Image (cartoon, rainbow, N blue to C red; front, side, top):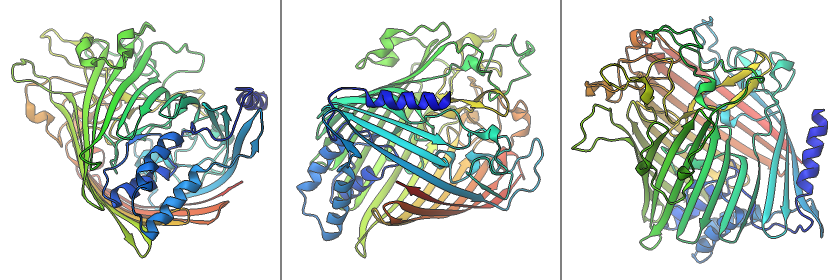
Length: 599
């Protein structure tokens, strides 16, 4: 049956239109494609501010970025990078004809993961037994087999689908509980229960013109030029179920996107259904979810618009973003939130929505040096406002350098980020107590910017939800420092080193929101947890220290030929006061390696 479904999808993709032609510029590049990275390198190295950093990009937009570089006097090494970009954008079809034009790529990848720290595993103590705590993050993990199919229709239509065979993110035996593991399916410790049937993770249709693009389907988003993540939208989610419109010119870009997620009532239920006491001292496990036979009810939509400008002789980039999280338990959506030029804050529908505004800028004062910054406002009190809502702000900034070293592309960066404890979180207005203090309990969901992708786990026979911050990957209550340096020969090899340090307070994506008179309780990083917690009901009593994480590592890759690529990464990780519990320290060495063969 599943084979028939795949065959039907392939036939459907081939039948989009009777008029197909060669590459029409509507192809949407994945976030893993390094074409944009190479363009950004040339921009900064030659004295321009970074090009638009609202990914992903169509080939038409990337070619428009190249127009500026074509007018520059490039060095021999820069011209080599330019040739690499042109080769990437020159798509060679496997089949071209009057009625059809398509391309396909088949890849097999074998990844291995090794680390010595598997001691002390119990039901409640799983050191490094989670993809999230691995430096080589789950978003980078490759499937064992992968088939990419893409088709071009006429001058305006493009479609893509990625069919993979691999292990589910939700494994029967937790990731990291063995000293050595691979991504090979059906080989111990992997079992048939681990097979992933949530595919495709990237599949969409797109159409557009020379200066605009519309995309609908599954794809990843990444908004900003941060190295450790971005405050508005980071690339930490497997995919967004989105509709995205963008129009662009050489100095202006506008993006409007809607992205839909499961409503929180599917995995954070009310008091009665969870048998939670009226005093709200008991809680739930957000990951438990429900079976595939439960009706998916409620609307939860991330909606955002984003304006970008280039100014001051191409040396400054400016970005303004407003985004909203809209929720409805009755499956109704207020069409006002779909106004691409409206002001979401001024709709005043706090019981249904939470709005955020962000400002970003980057500046290249001299060739090879770029300074960038981001500021995000979630909750902010004006001088005449009389309430005790905690501030919820985020700041990120850094400096990047690009330089030719021995004929290769060199880069380096320093970055700092600070986020308030209640950033991305917010109360449920119906949860006010008798004194009208807005307090969220473990049985209540808040209209926050924490989202979950619904996975199906064969092992448990139920849906699985793993909440994550939509914005900065480390969420609120964090102080982050990061240093990075690398050298690359585009299309051949790369080597990169990174040092990361983070102080993280007691708040996380499960923390319940609460208004408080004690402003020190909302100062980053916090040392106590003032409220209940969806996933840790003892957080108020047990979290008593700032967690400190230090990571140093190196990553390298080498392309042997156009079909074969090898890569590896080794990281040392040390965590003091793990899970914000004083004296609970962890350390590990994590080794990831892989090779990929494609045809």
